Length: 127
Image (cartoon, rainbow, N blue to C red; front, side, top):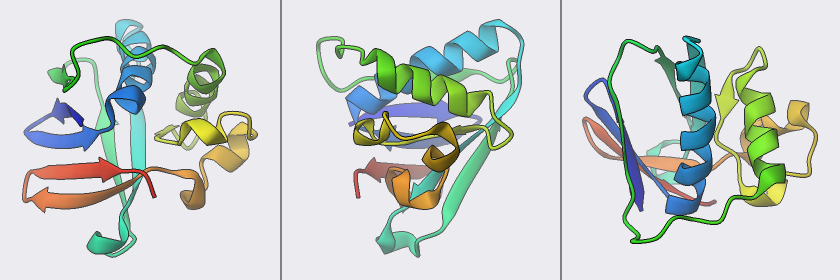
């Protein structure tokens, strides 16, 4: 599990998902764009959703657990990018949903689940 730390909050994601999210997030922040980033919470934390407003002026830190870079799935990357540019913002979705239409990709049943690990840390896992 890798992690994304933003404004004193750390969320852990699978390294492969995090690699794809990093590309999309960095592209938007390089352009000076702010946007919403959302994910579905796991059953252990009540099936809720979490969101963070990402802004270029707030430090962001990506940490990968693995020692090698993940292969990038261009279809998944395009789906995440399309999501990030939608009214719903970037929604963390599974690779298996990459061929699903973007409007459906923002639905909760297509997102990665997360559960709180502590007050300032959440852990992501695939549902």
